[in-house]
Image (cartoon, rainbow over the protein chains, first blue to last red):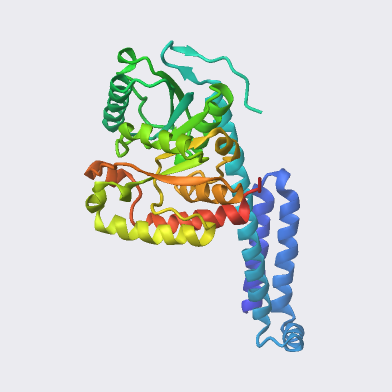
Length: 118
Length: 239
Protein backbone atom coordinates (compact mmCIF):
# COMPACT_ATOMS: atom_id res chain seq x y z
CA UNK A 1 0.00 0.00 0.00
CA UNK A 2 2.73 2.44 1.00
CA UNK A 3 4.66 2.18 -2.30
CA UNK A 4 1.54 3.11 -4.28
CA UNK A 5 0.68 6.04 -2.01
CA UNK A 6 4.27 7.25 -2.09
CA UNK A 7 4.45 7.06 -5.88
CA UNK A 8 1.15 8.94 -6.18
CA UNK A 9 2.49 11.61 -3.87
CA UNK A 10 5.64 12.03 -5.98
CA UNK A 11 3.62 12.18 -9.19
CA UNK A 12 1.30 14.76 -7.65
CA UNK A 13 4.27 16.98 -6.70
CA UNK A 14 5.77 16.68 -10.17
CA UNK A 15 2.48 17.51 -11.86
CA UNK A 16 1.85 20.55 -9.67
CA UNK A 17 5.36 21.86 -10.33
CA UNK A 18 5.05 21.15 -14.05
CA UNK A 19 1.89 23.22 -14.23
CA UNK A 20 2.82 26.09 -11.92
CA UNK A 21 6.59 26.49 -12.20
CA UNK A 22 7.73 28.93 -14.90
CA UNK A 23 9.10 27.40 -18.10
CA UNK A 24 12.49 29.00 -17.40
CA UNK A 25 13.13 26.44 -14.65
CA UNK A 26 12.08 23.42 -16.74
CA UNK A 27 15.61 22.01 -16.49
CA UNK A 28 15.37 22.12 -12.71
CA UNK A 29 12.05 20.29 -12.97
CA UNK A 30 13.69 17.56 -15.05
CA UNK A 31 16.37 17.27 -12.39
CA UNK A 32 13.59 16.82 -9.84
CA UNK A 33 12.05 14.07 -12.00
CA UNK A 34 15.40 12.28 -11.98
CA UNK A 35 15.74 12.60 -8.20
CA UNK A 36 12.18 11.42 -7.60
CA UNK A 37 12.77 8.49 -9.96
CA UNK A 38 15.62 7.30 -7.76
CA UNK A 39 13.35 7.65 -4.71
CA UNK A 40 10.64 5.68 -6.53
CA UNK A 41 13.01 2.81 -7.30
CA UNK A 42 13.72 2.55 -3.57
CA UNK A 43 10.12 1.62 -2.84
CA UNK A 44 9.63 -0.45 -6.01
CA UNK A 45 12.85 -2.46 -5.88
CA UNK A 46 13.58 -2.73 -2.18
CA UNK A 47 15.50 -6.02 -2.49
CA UNK A 48 17.89 -4.59 -5.06
CA UNK A 49 18.56 -1.54 -2.87
CA UNK A 50 19.03 -3.79 0.18
CA UNK A 51 21.63 -5.80 -1.73
CA UNK A 52 23.38 -2.61 -2.78
CA UNK A 53 23.35 -1.35 0.83
CA UNK A 54 24.88 -4.59 2.07
CA UNK A 55 27.46 -4.46 -0.70
CA UNK A 56 28.42 -0.92 0.38
CA UNK A 57 28.50 -1.95 4.04
CA UNK A 58 25.49 0.18 5.03
CA UNK A 59 22.81 -1.28 7.28
CA UNK A 60 19.66 0.06 5.66
CA UNK A 61 19.02 1.11 2.03
CA UNK A 62 17.59 4.44 3.20
CA UNK A 63 20.94 5.27 4.79
CA UNK A 64 22.42 5.55 1.29
CA UNK A 65 20.05 8.48 0.73
CA UNK A 66 20.69 9.95 4.18
CA UNK A 67 24.48 9.98 3.76
CA UNK A 68 24.32 11.27 0.19
CA UNK A 69 21.79 13.96 1.05
CA UNK A 70 23.86 15.10 4.04
CA UNK A 71 26.98 15.44 1.89
CA UNK A 72 25.10 17.34 -0.83
CA UNK A 73 23.41 19.66 1.69
CA UNK A 74 26.72 20.45 3.41
CA UNK A 75 28.32 21.22 0.06
CA UNK A 76 25.38 23.42 -0.95
CA UNK A 77 25.62 25.28 2.35
CA UNK A 78 29.30 26.10 1.83
CA UNK A 79 28.78 27.10 -1.80
CA UNK A 80 25.83 29.26 -0.77
CA UNK A 81 27.94 31.02 1.91
CA UNK A 82 30.68 31.63 -0.65
CA UNK A 83 28.18 33.14 -3.09
CA UNK A 84 26.72 35.26 -0.29
CA UNK A 85 30.18 36.54 0.65
CA UNK A 86 30.91 37.44 -2.97
CA UNK A 87 27.60 39.28 -3.27
CA UNK A 88 28.27 41.17 -0.04
CA UNK A 89 31.73 42.17 -1.32
CA UNK A 90 30.23 43.47 -4.56
CA UNK A 91 27.49 45.34 -2.68
CA UNK A 92 30.10 46.96 -0.43
CA UNK A 93 32.16 48.12 -3.42
CA UNK A 94 29.04 49.50 -5.10
CA UNK A 95 27.81 51.38 -2.03
CA UNK A 96 31.33 52.70 -1.43
CA UNK A 97 31.73 53.95 -4.99
CA UNK A 98 28.36 55.73 -4.87
CA UNK A 99 29.11 57.36 -1.52
CA UNK A 100 32.54 58.56 -2.68
CA UNK A 101 31.11 59.87 -5.94
CA UNK A 102 28.43 61.83 -4.11
CA UNK A 103 30.64 63.08 -1.26
CA UNK A 104 29.67 66.50 0.02
CA UNK A 105 32.15 69.16 1.09
CA UNK A 106 30.06 70.67 3.84
CA UNK A 107 32.09 73.80 4.38
CA UNK A 108 31.13 74.97 0.92
CA UNK A 109 28.04 72.75 0.61
CA UNK A 110 29.13 71.67 -2.84
CA UNK A 111 29.00 68.14 -4.10
CA UNK A 112 32.39 66.98 -5.31
CA UNK A 113 32.52 66.03 -8.96
CA UNK A 114 34.93 63.20 -8.70
CA UNK A 115 35.56 60.04 -10.53
CA UNK A 116 35.48 56.60 -9.01
CA UNK A 117 38.63 55.58 -7.19
CA UNK A 118 40.80 53.22 -9.18
CA UNK B 1 50.78 68.20 7.19
CA UNK B 2 47.32 67.14 6.01
CA UNK B 3 45.39 65.23 8.65
CA UNK B 4 42.15 63.39 7.87
CA UNK B 5 39.95 62.42 10.81
CA UNK B 6 37.69 59.60 9.66
CA UNK B 7 34.52 59.13 11.71
CA UNK B 8 32.04 56.35 10.94
CA UNK B 9 28.55 57.00 12.29
CA UNK B 10 25.33 55.08 12.48
CA UNK B 11 22.23 56.43 14.20
CA UNK B 12 24.34 58.37 16.70
CA UNK B 13 21.83 61.19 17.16
CA UNK B 14 22.76 63.73 19.83
CA UNK B 15 25.94 61.80 20.78
CA UNK B 16 27.45 62.84 17.46
CA UNK B 17 26.50 66.51 17.98
CA UNK B 18 28.28 66.54 21.33
CA UNK B 19 31.32 64.82 19.83
CA UNK B 20 31.56 67.28 16.92
CA UNK B 21 31.21 70.20 19.29
CA UNK B 22 34.17 68.92 21.29
CA UNK B 23 36.19 68.32 18.12
CA UNK B 24 35.63 71.88 16.96
CA UNK B 25 36.38 73.18 20.45
CA UNK B 26 39.69 71.29 20.48
CA UNK B 27 40.73 72.64 17.08
CA UNK B 28 39.80 76.19 18.00
CA UNK B 29 41.70 76.22 21.29
CA UNK B 30 44.74 74.23 20.14
CA UNK B 31 45.70 75.76 16.84
CA UNK B 32 48.23 73.61 15.07
CA UNK B 33 50.03 73.83 11.78
CA UNK B 34 48.13 70.77 10.65
CA UNK B 35 45.42 71.10 8.08
CA UNK B 36 42.50 69.12 9.49
CA UNK B 37 39.78 67.54 7.36
CA UNK B 38 36.99 65.59 8.99
CA UNK B 39 35.50 62.80 6.87
CA UNK B 40 32.19 61.65 8.31
CA UNK B 41 30.82 58.43 6.88
CA UNK B 42 27.16 57.96 7.62
CA UNK B 43 26.61 54.23 7.44
CA UNK B 44 22.98 54.34 6.39
CA UNK B 45 21.49 56.10 9.43
CA UNK B 46 17.71 56.32 9.54
CA UNK B 47 17.82 60.07 10.15
CA UNK B 48 20.18 62.51 8.40
CA UNK B 49 23.11 63.90 10.35
CA UNK B 50 23.08 67.58 11.29
CA UNK B 51 26.28 69.58 11.40
CA UNK B 52 25.40 72.39 13.75
CA UNK B 53 29.04 73.41 14.18
CA UNK B 54 29.86 74.22 10.57
CA UNK B 55 29.83 77.96 10.89
CA UNK B 56 31.83 77.88 14.09
CA UNK B 57 34.86 76.17 12.62
CA UNK B 58 37.37 76.41 9.82
CA UNK B 59 37.70 72.64 9.73
CA UNK B 60 36.85 71.12 6.36
CA UNK B 61 33.99 68.68 6.81
CA UNK B 62 33.18 66.03 4.23
CA UNK B 63 30.08 63.86 4.40
CA UNK B 64 29.86 60.49 2.70
CA UNK B 65 26.71 58.45 2.95
CA UNK B 66 26.25 54.72 2.56
CA UNK B 67 22.82 54.09 1.06
CA UNK B 68 22.53 50.92 3.13
CA UNK B 69 24.01 49.94 6.46
CA UNK B 70 27.16 47.88 5.88
CA UNK B 71 28.95 48.06 9.20
CA UNK B 72 31.65 50.10 10.90
CA UNK B 73 34.53 48.42 9.08
CA UNK B 74 33.02 49.20 5.69
CA UNK B 75 32.36 52.81 6.70
CA UNK B 76 35.94 53.22 7.89
CA UNK B 77 37.32 51.85 4.63
CA UNK B 78 35.12 54.25 2.66
CA UNK B 79 36.41 57.20 4.68
CA UNK B 80 40.04 56.09 4.44
CA UNK B 81 39.75 55.53 0.68
CA UNK B 82 38.22 58.96 0.21
CA UNK B 83 40.87 60.74 2.28
CA UNK B 84 43.64 58.80 0.54
CA UNK B 85 42.44 59.35 -3.00
CA UNK B 86 40.73 62.73 -2.90
CA UNK B 87 42.19 64.68 0.02
CA UNK B 88 45.78 63.50 -0.40
CA UNK B 89 46.10 63.19 3.37
CA UNK B 90 49.43 62.45 5.04
CA UNK B 91 48.05 61.30 8.39
CA UNK B 92 44.81 59.46 9.07
CA UNK B 93 43.00 59.35 12.40
CA UNK B 94 40.03 57.06 13.00
CA UNK B 95 37.62 57.71 15.85
CA UNK B 96 34.19 56.54 16.93
CA UNK B 97 31.41 59.08 16.53
CA UNK B 98 29.54 58.18 19.71
CA UNK B 99 31.54 60.45 21.99
CA UNK B 100 33.60 57.74 23.70
CA UNK B 101 36.82 59.10 22.20
CA UNK B 102 38.24 62.48 23.14
CA UNK B 103 39.45 64.74 20.29
CA UNK B 104 41.94 66.28 22.73
CA UNK B 105 43.91 63.02 22.41
CA UNK B 106 44.48 63.55 18.67
CA UNK B 107 47.74 65.51 19.12
CA UNK B 108 49.09 62.80 21.45
CA UNK B 109 48.49 60.17 18.77
CA UNK B 110 49.96 62.23 15.92
CA UNK B 111 53.00 63.30 17.93
CA UNK B 112 53.71 59.69 18.83
CA UNK B 113 53.37 58.65 15.18
CA UNK B 114 55.69 61.35 13.86
CA UNK B 115 58.27 61.48 16.65
CA UNK B 116 58.71 57.70 16.88
CA UNK B 117 58.67 57.25 13.08
CA UNK B 118 55.85 54.74 13.30
CA UNK B 119 53.38 53.63 10.63
CA UNK B 120 50.45 53.26 13.01
CA UNK B 121 49.61 54.18 16.58
CA UNK B 122 46.83 52.36 18.42
CA UNK B 123 44.97 54.13 21.20
CA UNK B 124 45.33 52.42 24.55
CA UNK B 125 42.71 53.14 27.18
CA UNK B 126 44.65 51.28 29.84
CA UNK B 127 47.57 53.74 29.74
CA UNK B 128 45.44 56.52 31.17
CA UNK B 129 44.04 57.07 34.63
CA UNK B 130 40.68 55.84 33.42
CA UNK B 131 41.73 52.24 33.97
CA UNK B 132 39.37 51.70 36.88
CA UNK B 133 36.44 53.13 34.98
CA UNK B 134 36.38 50.29 32.46
CA UNK B 135 33.35 48.15 33.33
CA UNK B 136 34.37 44.74 34.72
CA UNK B 137 32.68 42.67 32.03
CA UNK B 138 34.15 44.89 29.33
CA UNK B 139 37.60 44.52 30.87
CA UNK B 140 37.32 40.71 30.91
CA UNK B 141 36.16 40.66 27.30
CA UNK B 142 38.97 42.99 26.24
CA UNK B 143 41.57 40.84 27.99
CA UNK B 144 40.34 37.78 26.08
CA UNK B 145 40.34 39.78 22.84
CA UNK B 146 43.89 41.06 23.44
CA UNK B 147 45.23 37.54 23.84
CA UNK B 148 43.22 36.25 20.90
CA UNK B 149 44.61 39.00 18.65
CA UNK B 150 48.15 38.36 19.84
CA UNK B 151 47.69 34.69 19.07
CA UNK B 152 46.44 35.12 15.51
CA UNK B 153 48.41 38.25 14.47
CA UNK B 154 51.52 38.36 16.66
CA UNK B 155 50.94 42.10 17.14
CA UNK B 156 51.47 42.89 20.81
CA UNK B 157 49.28 45.77 21.90
CA UNK B 158 47.71 46.08 25.31
CA UNK B 159 44.26 47.17 24.14
CA UNK B 160 41.89 45.55 21.69
CA UNK B 161 38.98 46.74 19.61
CA UNK B 162 39.79 50.35 20.24
CA UNK B 163 38.66 52.39 17.26
CA UNK B 164 41.00 55.30 18.01
CA UNK B 165 43.97 54.92 15.65
CA UNK B 166 46.41 57.14 13.84
CA UNK B 167 48.44 56.06 10.83
CA UNK B 168 50.54 57.37 8.00
CA UNK B 169 50.18 57.17 4.25
CA UNK B 170 52.16 53.92 4.00
CA UNK B 171 49.71 52.22 6.34
CA UNK B 172 46.68 53.76 4.61
CA UNK B 173 47.91 52.38 1.29
CA UNK B 174 48.11 48.92 2.86
CA UNK B 175 44.67 49.06 4.46
CA UNK B 176 41.89 47.42 2.50
CA UNK B 177 39.42 46.26 5.11
CA UNK B 178 37.35 43.25 4.12
CA UNK B 179 35.73 42.97 7.52
CA UNK B 180 32.61 45.11 7.17
CA UNK B 181 31.59 44.82 10.79
CA UNK B 182 33.39 44.89 14.15
CA UNK B 183 36.12 42.39 13.26
CA UNK B 184 37.90 45.16 11.33
CA UNK B 185 39.73 46.02 14.56
CA UNK B 186 41.45 42.63 14.46
CA UNK B 187 41.95 42.95 10.71
CA UNK B 188 43.95 46.16 11.31
CA UNK B 189 46.42 44.11 13.36
CA UNK B 190 46.52 41.43 10.66
CA UNK B 191 47.42 44.14 8.13
CA UNK B 192 50.14 45.47 10.44
CA UNK B 193 51.63 41.99 10.70
CA UNK B 194 51.30 41.18 7.00
CA UNK B 195 52.96 44.42 5.83
CA UNK B 196 55.47 44.52 8.70
CA UNK B 197 54.34 48.01 9.72
CA UNK B 198 55.96 49.77 12.68
CA UNK B 199 53.39 50.20 15.42
CA UNK B 200 53.06 51.70 18.86
CA UNK B 201 50.50 52.72 21.43
CA UNK B 202 49.46 56.05 22.91
CA UNK B 203 47.34 56.79 25.96
CA UNK B 204 43.80 57.86 25.19
CA UNK B 205 40.77 58.66 27.28
CA UNK B 206 37.50 56.82 26.87
CA UNK B 207 34.26 58.03 28.33
CA UNK B 208 31.76 55.27 28.96
CA UNK B 209 28.13 56.26 29.19
CA UNK B 210 25.10 54.03 29.50
CA UNK B 211 24.09 55.21 26.06
CA UNK B 212 27.40 54.42 24.36
CA UNK B 213 27.74 51.07 26.12
CA UNK B 214 24.26 50.10 25.03
CA UNK B 215 25.00 50.99 21.40
CA UNK B 216 28.57 49.69 21.37
CA UNK B 217 29.72 46.09 21.25
CA UNK B 218 27.91 43.81 23.62
CA UNK B 219 29.74 41.22 25.66
CA UNK B 220 28.67 38.40 23.34
CA UNK B 221 29.86 40.22 20.24
CA UNK B 222 33.30 38.67 20.76
CA UNK B 223 31.91 35.44 19.36
CA UNK B 224 30.50 37.28 16.36
CA UNK B 225 33.94 38.78 15.72
CA UNK B 226 35.52 35.31 15.70
CA UNK B 227 32.78 34.05 13.38
CA UNK B 228 33.28 37.01 11.00
CA UNK B 229 37.04 36.50 10.94
CA UNK B 230 36.54 32.87 10.02
CA UNK B 231 33.89 33.71 7.42
CA UNK B 232 36.09 36.21 5.61
CA UNK B 233 39.10 33.88 5.87
CA UNK B 234 37.13 31.06 4.27
CA UNK B 235 34.90 32.75 1.77
CA UNK B 236 36.06 36.23 0.76
CA UNK B 237 38.40 36.75 -2.14
CA UNK B 238 41.98 37.39 -1.12
CA UNK B 239 43.80 40.68 -1.80
